[in-house]
Length: 111
Image (cartoon, rainbow, N blue to C red; front, side, top):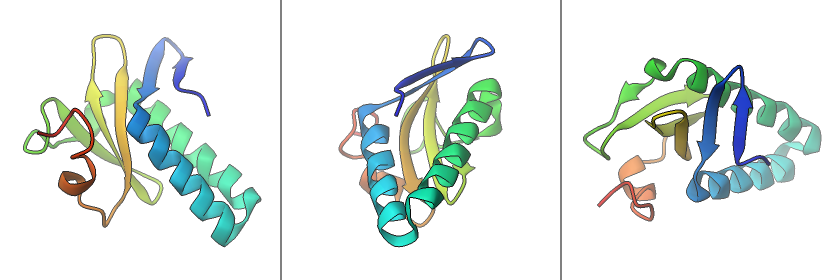
């Protein structure tokens, strides 16, 4: 899976934590729904990330969780991201029922 994508001069990067989350999503999806479903869902996720890169204002603020923080639904998950100078950084990809305060504590974004 690519860590850095550039399409139409709009860019996004995946944090190490977001990459770990995507691997867990991949394994869960393949185990429960097969490889073909993972390929479809991966396309949904990557397309959603690109939509955010193209339109970073789509997300809602979550400054109460971490500085410069935003979130936006992508597929059955929530993408948590920050707006950087020339790209967005996907910080985490969590299930919609997962509490970001709990799952983002392991990152540099939440104190």
